[in-house]
Length: 341
Figure 1: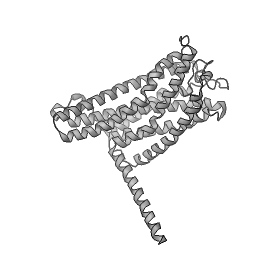
Figure 2 (figure 1 turned 60 degrees about the vertical axis):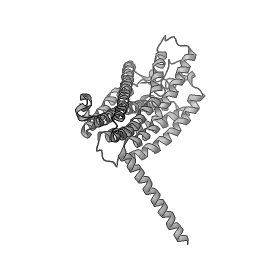
Figure 3 (figure 1 turned 120 degrees about the horizontal axis):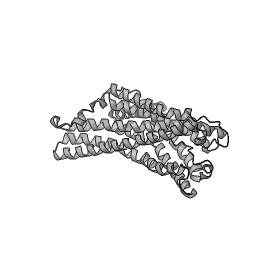
Figure 4 (figure 1 turned 30 degrees about the vertical axis):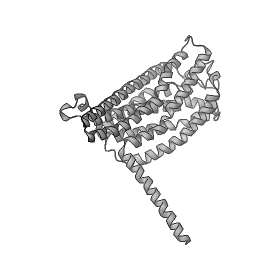
């Protein structure tokens, strides 16, 4: 996978830094690190007091874990760009934290696909007449099972771990100050081959997940239209709420992940020997890759919106805790006022 300090051919990477990559982006990463930790900390605090009574809750809890893991890589990125920690910090990023960033990102992407499928089964299956429920929908009801969701979550984490762990293990060439910023130079020959394989695999997962999201959203939108035509107000209300929640996933997915994966294709080609790209073109592609990668990282701040819109239990727990805090604050203010009289 392209690492956070992913390299172009070794002679040019250090020249590709700019005001944008060395000053603007570290500041932005610092901001989303603080905001993301706050939002996901609250989400984790609420979610892990909520029983896993549905497949949806299981998938959402795993998204929280993926976001928290991704957040742990941000301080290393910021410190490295601010020239803190010396050259060895860049080695740590190449070997470990960049791998953590990408594995967490793709785990989150997979769970977005599973959540969309679960919503598709629930909404389309719920609003279709029993005699007309499609075989494809009824055959996917296992996605709503808590036991199956837990097994699938474990499978997803294991699959991504097996895919990305060699990227850390095989980044084992002797490091020094001159090659510390060039992650590909730290890889063994086998590590370079594995890097290519895992990159194609993860990008393939992304595009498959995108197709799944588009299919689910289109099916749900079609179901809404059909419900309105049948003048079934109760089903229409269910569809409107569910449409709003799954649209939040689609919006976050397109804003955060699509730009990076579109940019990644020409950027990866530009890294290859004799690619024919001019230095100015490679510089531009590097800047675009870094900017769109930041959009992918922004996902950690937008996912809590999905939790709030999609999970009624989460939403009710959050609102209940907020109202309880306001009541306690009001009671404390009243008590303090009374004591001054």
